[in-house]
Figure 1: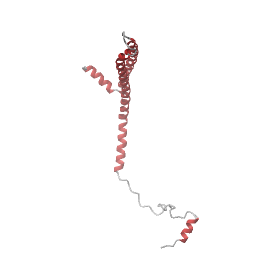
Figure 2: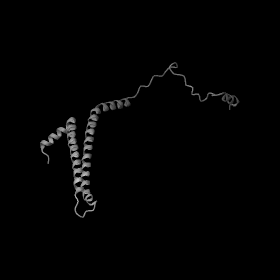
Figure 3: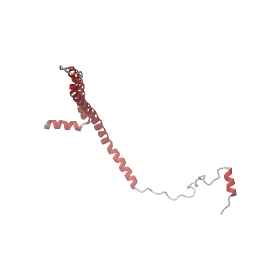
Length: 159
């Protein structure tokens, strides 16, 4: 159960991006310290458990007895490492969120300006005089391209 004081302090941390990054970074460093401690514990536990032999054991019996404990320690270390990675992602996402919020007014203003320019009818240009109208461009499709084309044009009869 949380107290009102701790809730207020977390609320203050959640409001400030710098405080949020610092708090999550602190948790991340503690978790990394915990990972290194647990890794050392796992190594020492492995040595101790595999070295415990009982009279009548076969060579692999000590290793088989140690295996469930080693597996659980490895799973615990993996889980804490994934929590460290998640803390890093949280910091990135929080910073990304703040950047998007800061850029939002400019984006909305640009979008509103674009929408307004679409709504206003564009003025049509006044009829151009003959001097202002450019001559039609030749596409080159009807022109002969080679000497052979000239011969075909000469031999062709018009309808």
